[in-house]
Image (cartoon, rainbow, N blue to C red):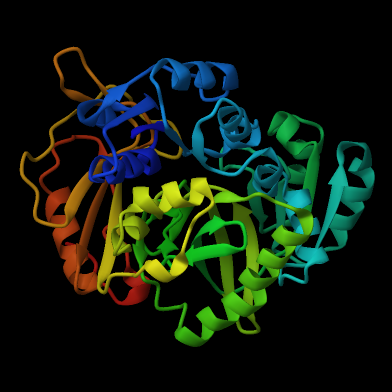
Amino acid sequence: MNVLVIGSGGREHALLKACLASPLATRVIAAPGNGGMEADAQCFPLDVENVPAAVELAKREAVDMAIIGPEVPLALGMADALREAGVLVYGPGFKGAQLEASKAVCKDFFAKYGIPTARSRTFSSAEIDAALRYVAAEPLPVVIKASGLAAGKGVIIAQSREEALDATRGMLDGSMFGEAGAQVVVEECLVGDEASITLIVCGDKYVMLPAAQDHKRVGEGDSGPNTGGMGAYCPAPVVTPEMERRIVSEVIEPTMRGFAAEEYDFRGTLFIGIMVTAKGPMVLEFNVRFGDPETQVVLPMLDADPLALMLDCAKGTLDPANVAIRSGSAIVVVLAAKGYPGKYAKGDLIGLPTQLPVNSSIVHAGTKRAADGSILSAGGRVLGVCAQAETLQKAADIAYGIVGKVQWDNKNFRRDIGHRAGVTPAK
């Protein structure tokens, strides 16, 4: 089977590695890929927002199955177009993708099917004055969200009234996020511990992967500005067996009923951001693709071939009873460019260790491959160092040992990934 992985980040490199390890794959290609993906497979140039170009590439390369990594092509209907061209696709169609593409649509879905979430109001760009009045009366901190896709930057947790009003105004007048802010969702700020729940969904059937926790803040001790994620680990102790049962009964089962009622033909990942509060699980958001960096820790926990699961999902034949989860733990430590998420240099030469311990890997995100084959930095989050072991502490020790061998003058990373699960910070 010929497989195409669409995307260029750490998530896609992790998916590519899983496909390459599968006996089902005759050939695995990627588009557009990155420096590390180019070293593992043939990569083709592609603007992931160009749906006809993706279809043309799939036809030209005789692709049997496509795995769409990022949210933007899903929101543009790429899965539908590829399916119409006869390609099996892992990823929801346009209708399902709106659950991430529009936070307003998602909140309406929560309300309709009784899914616990933060109290909120939605405002359009024609309602700036009403939105400002509402925000002025809300308790602080307050969460202001651009309803559309904003590359992971469309959520502001405003600590002051001025910040809240500026964010609301800036989103609705288009100066902050353009069309993504044409609607805003104003939410109460929930208090608790976040967890990431990953489901492989096929109609009314699903496989639930171990709960993960992401570290969003750039600095140790969860300090500094938010990033796309500085590391993750699983399983997350905050999701106890009892909490998992509540998530299934209060969140997942109503969602599956909603999918059936709304006739979603959902074949892909449903990534659920959960806040574990004193009152129970509250949903922060739905994403319709694997998380990054969560993918790097949840895929290795599958005691099954991930490509086989995604293929069954794409074909509509997923059987959750045949899927088991491994024991142990997994961790990923993200190496970012110094200065990220602010200004940072690109084009730095990176030297990688040639040999890695068993059950470890280096996943590329923001890299490019030079003409001589060397690896250069090309983004903010650049590499992910992944490891699995019988305990989270052992996995962390392996990962940080590899981090120390990566030669890169401007690398920046957190030494305390997993600290909320009792991992001792690296020295």
